Amino acid sequence: MEDVLDVYARPYDAARPVICLDEKSKELHGEVREPLPPEAGQARRIDSEYVRNGTANLFVWVEPLAGRRGVQVTDRRCATDFGGVLGHLSDVVYPTAEKIVLVVDNLNTHGPQSLYETFAPQEAHRLAHRFEWHHTPEHGSWLNIAECELSVLHRQCLDRRIADKETLVREVAAWEQARNEAARLVRWQFTTADARIKLRRLYPQIHNDSD
Image (cartoon, rainbow, N blue to C red; front, side, top):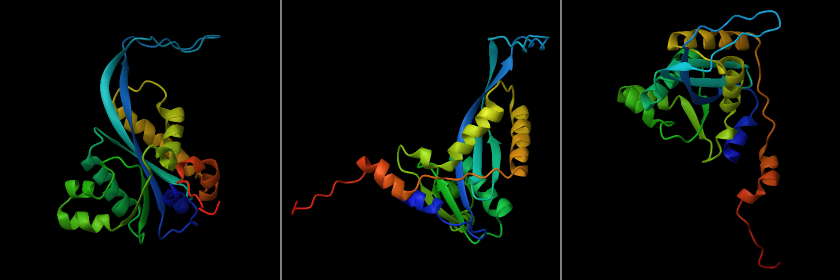
Protein backbone atom coordinates (compact mmCIF):
# COMPACT_ATOMS: atom_id res chain seq x y z
CA MET A 1 0.00 0.00 0.00
CA GLU A 2 2.71 2.47 0.97
CA ASP A 3 4.60 1.71 -2.24
CA VAL A 4 1.60 2.77 -4.35
CA LEU A 5 0.90 5.82 -2.17
CA ASP A 6 4.52 6.92 -2.50
CA VAL A 7 4.15 6.71 -6.29
CA TYR A 8 1.11 8.98 -6.15
CA ALA A 9 3.06 11.50 -4.08
CA ARG A 10 5.67 11.98 -6.81
CA PRO A 11 5.64 15.29 -8.71
CA TYR A 12 4.63 15.27 -12.36
CA ASP A 13 7.42 14.06 -14.64
CA ALA A 14 6.69 13.80 -18.36
CA ALA A 15 9.72 11.54 -18.81
CA ARG A 16 8.34 9.06 -16.24
CA PRO A 17 4.54 9.25 -16.50
CA VAL A 18 2.50 7.51 -13.82
CA ILE A 19 -0.12 5.34 -15.52
CA CYS A 20 -2.88 3.47 -13.70
CA LEU A 21 -4.46 0.57 -15.60
CA ASP A 22 -7.52 -1.55 -14.87
CA GLU A 23 -10.22 -3.47 -16.71
CA LYS A 24 -13.97 -4.03 -16.59
CA SER A 25 -16.37 -6.32 -18.39
CA LYS A 26 -19.54 -5.00 -20.00
CA GLU A 27 -22.59 -7.13 -20.78
CA LEU A 28 -24.05 -6.32 -24.20
CA HIS A 29 -27.86 -6.11 -24.15
CA GLY A 30 -30.09 -5.55 -27.14
CA GLU A 31 -33.71 -4.47 -27.18
CA VAL A 32 -36.50 -7.00 -27.66
CA ARG A 33 -38.98 -4.20 -28.37
CA GLU A 34 -38.25 -0.78 -29.76
CA PRO A 35 -38.21 1.83 -26.94
CA LEU A 36 -41.05 4.35 -27.00
CA PRO A 37 -39.85 7.91 -27.69
CA PRO A 38 -40.32 10.62 -25.06
CA GLU A 39 -43.49 12.68 -25.08
CA ALA A 40 -44.64 15.78 -23.27
CA GLY A 41 -44.52 14.92 -19.57
CA GLN A 42 -43.33 11.38 -20.31
CA ALA A 43 -39.74 10.15 -20.44
CA ARG A 44 -38.49 7.62 -22.99
CA ARG A 45 -39.84 4.18 -22.08
CA ILE A 46 -37.74 1.02 -22.30
CA ASP A 47 -39.08 -2.50 -21.93
CA SER A 48 -37.59 -4.47 -19.03
CA GLU A 49 -37.01 -7.46 -21.31
CA TYR A 50 -33.77 -7.57 -23.28
CA VAL A 51 -31.65 -9.97 -25.30
CA ARG A 52 -28.13 -10.96 -24.25
CA ASN A 53 -25.45 -10.39 -26.87
CA GLY A 54 -22.43 -11.61 -24.91
CA THR A 55 -19.82 -9.49 -23.18
CA ALA A 56 -16.89 -7.25 -24.03
CA ASN A 57 -13.93 -6.16 -21.96
CA LEU A 58 -12.64 -2.63 -21.46
CA PHE A 59 -9.07 -1.80 -20.50
CA VAL A 60 -8.91 1.72 -19.06
CA TRP A 61 -5.68 3.58 -18.36
CA VAL A 62 -5.33 7.04 -16.87
CA GLU A 63 -2.44 9.42 -16.29
CA PRO A 64 -3.83 11.28 -13.24
CA LEU A 65 -1.53 14.30 -13.24
CA ALA A 66 -1.87 14.97 -16.98
CA GLY A 67 -5.62 14.50 -17.31
CA ARG A 68 -5.11 11.92 -20.02
CA ARG A 69 -6.77 8.54 -20.41
CA GLY A 70 -7.58 5.86 -22.95
CA VAL A 71 -9.95 2.93 -23.38
CA GLN A 72 -9.39 -0.22 -25.42
CA VAL A 73 -12.27 -2.62 -26.04
CA THR A 74 -11.40 -6.30 -26.41
CA ASP A 75 -13.34 -9.53 -26.68
CA ARG A 76 -11.60 -11.00 -23.65
CA ARG A 77 -9.44 -10.07 -20.66
CA CYS A 78 -6.70 -12.67 -21.04
CA ALA A 79 -2.93 -12.26 -20.74
CA THR A 80 -2.39 -11.53 -24.43
CA ASP A 81 -4.99 -8.75 -24.36
CA PHE A 82 -3.23 -7.19 -21.37
CA GLY A 83 0.13 -7.57 -23.11
CA GLY A 84 -1.24 -5.87 -26.20
CA VAL A 85 -2.41 -2.89 -24.13
CA LEU A 86 1.06 -2.57 -22.60
CA GLY A 87 2.67 -2.66 -26.03
CA HIS A 88 0.30 0.10 -27.19
CA LEU A 89 1.10 2.24 -24.13
CA SER A 90 4.84 1.77 -24.63
CA ASP A 91 5.22 2.32 -28.35
CA VAL A 92 2.18 4.35 -29.40
CA VAL A 93 1.06 6.48 -26.46
CA TYR A 94 4.37 7.05 -24.64
CA PRO A 95 7.15 6.17 -27.12
CA THR A 96 9.56 8.84 -25.82
CA ALA A 97 9.12 8.15 -22.09
CA GLU A 98 12.25 7.04 -20.26
CA LYS A 99 10.14 4.72 -18.11
CA ILE A 100 6.40 4.23 -17.68
CA VAL A 101 5.47 3.99 -14.00
CA LEU A 102 2.65 1.45 -14.06
CA VAL A 103 0.12 0.86 -11.25
CA VAL A 104 -2.05 -2.26 -11.58
CA ASP A 105 -3.80 -4.64 -9.21
CA ASN A 106 -2.37 -8.07 -8.47
CA LEU A 107 -4.46 -10.10 -10.89
CA ASN A 108 -2.41 -13.03 -12.17
CA THR A 109 -2.25 -11.60 -15.71
CA HIS A 110 -0.98 -8.20 -14.55
CA GLY A 111 2.74 -8.77 -14.78
CA PRO A 112 5.65 -9.06 -17.24
CA GLN A 113 4.75 -12.71 -17.90
CA SER A 114 1.83 -11.52 -20.01
CA LEU A 115 4.26 -9.84 -22.36
CA TYR A 116 6.00 -13.17 -22.94
CA GLU A 117 2.65 -14.74 -23.82
CA THR A 118 2.02 -11.96 -26.34
CA PHE A 119 5.37 -11.18 -27.99
CA ALA A 120 8.57 -12.90 -29.03
CA PRO A 121 11.04 -13.20 -26.11
CA GLN A 122 13.35 -10.37 -27.18
CA GLU A 123 10.41 -8.01 -27.71
CA ALA A 124 8.79 -9.03 -24.43
CA HIS A 125 12.09 -8.38 -22.64
CA ARG A 126 12.35 -4.92 -24.20
CA LEU A 127 8.79 -4.01 -23.24
CA ALA A 128 9.08 -5.38 -19.70
CA HIS A 129 11.95 -2.99 -19.06
CA ARG A 130 9.97 -0.05 -20.38
CA PHE A 131 7.78 -0.28 -17.27
CA GLU A 132 8.34 0.32 -13.57
CA TRP A 133 5.89 -2.09 -11.96
CA HIS A 134 3.79 -1.30 -8.88
CA HIS A 135 0.99 -3.58 -7.69
CA THR A 136 -1.80 -2.77 -5.27
CA PRO A 137 -2.04 -5.19 -2.33
CA GLU A 138 -4.53 -8.02 -2.13
CA HIS A 139 -8.03 -6.61 -1.42
CA GLY A 140 -6.56 -3.16 -2.06
CA SER A 141 -7.59 -2.53 -5.66
CA TRP A 142 -9.29 0.69 -4.44
CA LEU A 143 -5.77 2.12 -4.41
CA ASN A 144 -5.71 1.98 -8.20
CA ILE A 145 -6.80 5.37 -9.57
CA ALA A 146 -7.98 3.60 -12.72
CA GLU A 147 -10.89 2.31 -10.61
CA CYS A 148 -11.98 5.94 -10.13
CA GLU A 149 -11.86 6.45 -13.88
CA LEU A 150 -13.84 3.27 -14.47
CA SER A 151 -16.49 4.57 -12.07
CA VAL A 152 -16.78 7.79 -14.07
CA LEU A 153 -16.92 5.84 -17.33
CA HIS A 154 -19.73 3.69 -15.96
CA ARG A 155 -21.81 6.65 -14.77
CA GLN A 156 -21.31 8.79 -17.86
CA CYS A 157 -21.31 6.20 -20.62
CA LEU A 158 -21.92 2.55 -19.70
CA ASP A 159 -24.91 2.78 -17.35
CA ARG A 160 -27.39 1.85 -20.10
CA ARG A 161 -28.03 -0.84 -22.65
CA ILE A 162 -25.45 -1.17 -25.40
CA ALA A 163 -26.26 -3.84 -27.94
CA ASP A 164 -22.97 -4.71 -29.63
CA LYS A 165 -19.21 -4.25 -29.54
CA GLU A 166 -19.17 -1.82 -32.46
CA THR A 167 -21.53 0.55 -30.65
CA LEU A 168 -19.53 0.16 -27.44
CA VAL A 169 -16.28 1.08 -29.21
CA ARG A 170 -17.90 4.16 -30.75
CA GLU A 171 -19.49 5.33 -27.50
CA VAL A 172 -16.39 4.94 -25.31
CA ALA A 173 -14.26 6.65 -27.96
CA ALA A 174 -16.55 9.69 -27.83
CA TRP A 175 -16.43 9.67 -24.02
CA GLU A 176 -12.62 9.39 -24.05
CA GLN A 177 -12.24 12.27 -26.51
CA ALA A 178 -14.52 14.59 -24.54
CA ARG A 179 -12.86 13.80 -21.22
CA ASN A 180 -9.36 14.26 -22.64
CA GLU A 181 -10.28 17.54 -24.29
CA ALA A 182 -11.46 18.73 -20.88
CA ALA A 183 -8.14 17.46 -19.40
CA ARG A 184 -9.88 16.05 -16.33
CA LEU A 185 -7.22 15.54 -13.65
CA VAL A 186 -7.40 13.09 -10.76
CA ARG A 187 -6.06 14.59 -7.54
CA TRP A 188 -5.31 11.76 -5.12
CA GLN A 189 -5.57 12.91 -1.50
CA PHE A 190 -4.93 9.78 0.61
CA THR A 191 -1.26 9.70 1.70
CA THR A 192 1.08 7.32 3.48
CA ALA A 193 0.78 9.46 6.60
CA ASP A 194 -3.01 9.15 6.42
CA ALA A 195 -2.74 5.38 6.04
CA ARG A 196 -0.62 5.01 9.16
CA ILE A 197 -3.35 6.75 11.15
CA LYS A 198 -6.60 5.62 9.55
CA LEU A 199 -5.48 2.08 8.69
CA ARG A 200 -3.20 1.44 11.65
CA ARG A 201 -4.98 -1.87 12.25
CA LEU A 202 -3.20 -3.19 9.14
CA TYR A 203 0.27 -2.52 10.55
CA PRO A 204 2.17 -4.96 12.77
CA GLN A 205 1.91 -4.10 16.45
CA ILE A 206 5.37 -3.45 17.84
CA HIS A 207 5.66 -3.75 21.62
CA ASN A 208 8.46 -2.17 23.59
CA ASP A 209 9.71 -4.55 26.27
CA SER A 210 10.39 -1.62 28.60
CA ASP A 211 6.69 -0.64 28.63
